[in-house]
Amino acid sequence: MDLSIIAPYIVSIIAAIISGISSYLVAHNKSASEIQTLKEANEHEIEKLMKQHEVDLDNLKETHKLEMEKLEAEHRYSLELANSNAQNEMTKQLMGSMVGNMMAAPQMQDFLMKAISDSYMKGQQE
Image (cartoon, rainbow, N blue to C red; front, top):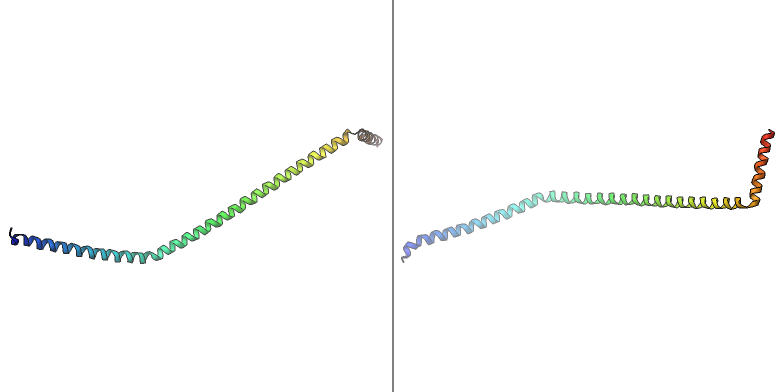
């Protein structure tokens, strides 16, 4: 084979390879610089979003804290109400049993009958 026949092809292939590599390197450097420029340009926006995120988190924490305090207050109120109801029921039962025991005594029955009859007599005299 004759080198003169293949030489133009080899030269054009080598030129294409050199051109491709140089185009790749120029495009890579250009895209890297554009990415860096975009990062720097958007850094302020990213910081703004991060601060807004922190504010939102603080608001959520405060809302949660207030909700928990509200629930605790409601729970304490319901416990106090239940305690009060239990005390009232116990007092009612105690008073009922005391009155029942007193009314069961024959002396008390006689005393009540006498008081009722005296009251009736006074009402008739007037």
